[in-house]
Image (cartoon, rainbow, N blue to C red):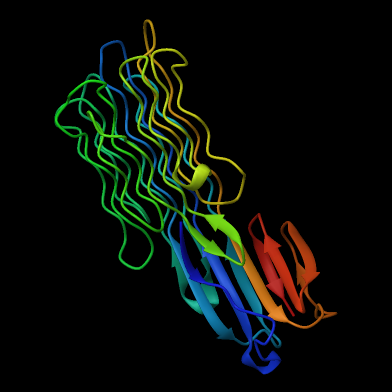
Length: 283
C-alpha cells in the first residue's frame, strides 16, 4: 500500500481543512461455463485537497455507489462518481472488470481501470491520471487462466493468465486504506487473485465460483472477478461505495450540518466528518 499523505498533530489550525473524495469501486466481471476467469473491478478515483476553508460554506456532496458484479453475458457495473460541486472536485468511478468466457466485454476505464477478462481479447481498462491506475491484462491465457486484477489507487492491477491476477494496491490516509483493486477470477481450482490491500474483493475460482465483494464499506475498492463455476454462469463481486471526508485541527465546529449520513469523531487534536451518503454540507 502507498501512503500519499499523513499529517501529524502539529498541523496548524489556521491551515484550513483537508478533504478526501473517494468514488465508488467497479464491480468484478462475470463469466460463463468454460475455462477463463473474469477481471477484477477497478478502484474508485481518489482526490485529496488541503488548506480548504470551511467557514460559511454550503457544499453539494455526491457519494458514488459501487458497481454491481457481472454475470454471464451481462456486464459488470462501473462505480459512480463522488464529488464536491462547489470545489470542482470530481473523483471518477472505478471501471468494471472484463468478462471471463464468451463474448467480448472489456474492462472499463475509470478512476482505476478494470482488469481484463481471461478470455482472449477482453482487454483491461485505463485509470484516470492523478486518481488511480490501469487494470491488469489477461496475460497469455495460460493455466490457471486468471483474469487481470483491477487497478488500485496506488498501483496497476497484476497480470492474469499464469500471473497472480492480484488487485492493485490502495493508498492510506490517516492510517486507513482506500481504493484497493479487485482480484481476477481463476479458471481452475487455484485461488483467484487477491484483493488489493485486503480491501478489494478476491477473485473466485472453480471451487467457490463468485468473486468476493469489496469490504469494508465506503472505501472505494473494486469487486473480485468471477471464477469458473462447475456449470453455468458465475457472478463477480460488488464494488464498495465511495466516501467524502472533511478533517481539520481542533474541536468540531458547532454549526456543521449535513443533510445526508455523516459521522463525526475527534482524536489526536483533529475532528473528522465522514460523509457516506449524498447531501448538503453547511457550516
